[in-house]
Length: 99
Image (cartoon, rainbow, N blue to C red; front, side, top):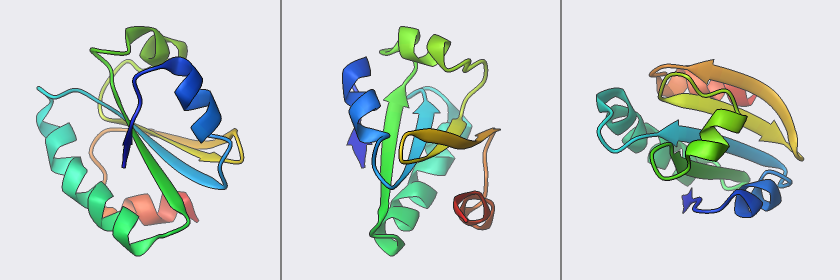
């Protein structure tokens, strides 16, 4: 899992084949519940890149992506946003988003 600190890092990483972006905050309960699910997904999907962005440390990036609630999940394929969901999702729901 990669933790993004700078906007230019984000732009480079989303160019990969399949990228799941998790906008989160350390104080967010649902975000904490989502983390182990993401870790499990990453272990099972070698082609998947998972990126975590702390909205408190990256306010501009969160604002640019219209993040109003967390967790917010964005799915990218070769730099193109293909899906966006807000709220805690199960592993099965995340797998469906990645199809």
